[in-house]
View 1 (cartoon, helix red, strand yellow):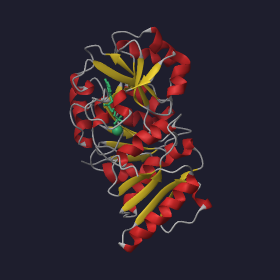
View 2 (view 1 turned 90 degrees about the vertical axis):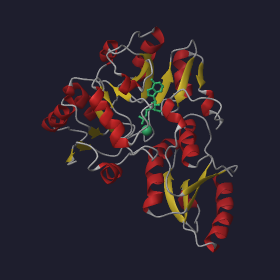
View 3 (view 1 turned 90 degrees about the horizontal axis):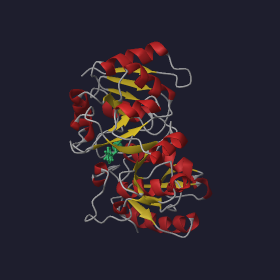
View 4 (view 1 turned 30 degrees about the vertical axis):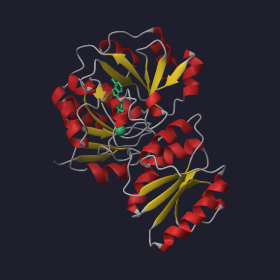
Length: 345
Ligand code: AMP
Ligand code: MG
C-alpha cells in the first residue's frame, strides 16, 4: 500500500492538508495523526470495514476494542445511551484532554469498533490537529495507538514512519506527543468509578471530582485470575526486544549502586547493557544510558521513546528504577511492568 506522508505544523495547522486527510477518513481510509498522548491510527468509527483496516494494520486481536475520538463534547450524545452526571462532571473538567470514558453504546457503533462489547470508550483530544481532522471528517474517529500490536506506543514521528509506512493510507506528521502515555480510561458502569488504565489524569485528580474512584484490581498485580476490564490490558504490551528489569532501591543512588554491580556481571558475559533513568548526569554508568528526564512528567513523556531506542541500539538487557506509584507514577509503572514482563528485582 502506498502511504501518503505529510508534515503539519501543529501550532498553525494547514487547513488544506487537514481537509486532504479528513477526506481520506471520510472515504473509509486509515490515517495516522498526532494527539497529545500518543500517535493514533484512525478510521471512521461508524464504518465496520474502515475499523477492520485498523485491526489489520496493527495486527490487533479482534476482541480488543478501539478508542473513539470526537471533536466536540456534544458529539458523544449521538453515540451513547446515557451521559450521567458523573460523566458530565468529568467531561467538563478534563475534556478536551487525556481522559477516556467508557459509556453504554448506541447501535450506531458497530461491533467491530467496540470489539463486541455493549460499551464504547470515548475521548475528546486536546490536540488541535486531531480535533480539526475529526471535525472535518464529519464522523467519530476510532484511533488506538499507532503501533504494531504488542510494541511500545509511538510518541515521535520517526517511530511511526519506521513501523507503519506501507500499512496505512496516510500519515500526518506533527511534533512529539506532549504526555507520552496513553489516556486514562475510566469506567462508570458501576456505582463506583473504576480506572481501567492509568494515565496522565491521575486517580487523585479523578477523586477530587468524583469522590471514591478505584483502580481495576487486575492492575494491582499480575494475577491472571483477575480478568482485566479493558480487554487490551491483558495482552503482551510495550515489549522491546531487550529484556527489561525493574530494579528496586530506596532512591536513585541506591539504584545506581545495584545497577553498577549488575553491569559488571553482565559485561563479563558480553551483553550490551542499557540503563533507563532520571537525572543520569549525577552518575556515570558502564552502560548506554537512556535519559528519562528530571521529573515524573518527563519520564512519562520519554518512556516509550526510550523503550523503542533500546532496540535501535541493540541493547540485550536494560535496567530501570521502580518509580513511586502515586500521581502519574501509577501510569509509568503500569507500562513499565508490562514492558519488563513483570521482571522486578
Ligand atoms: P489503545 O488506544 O491501543 O491503547 O487501546 C485502547 C484501549 O482501550 C485498550 O486497552 C482497550 O481494551 C480499551 N478499551 C476500548 N474500548 C473499551 C471498552 N468499551 N471497555 C473497556 N476498555 C476499552
Ligand atoms: Mg495501544
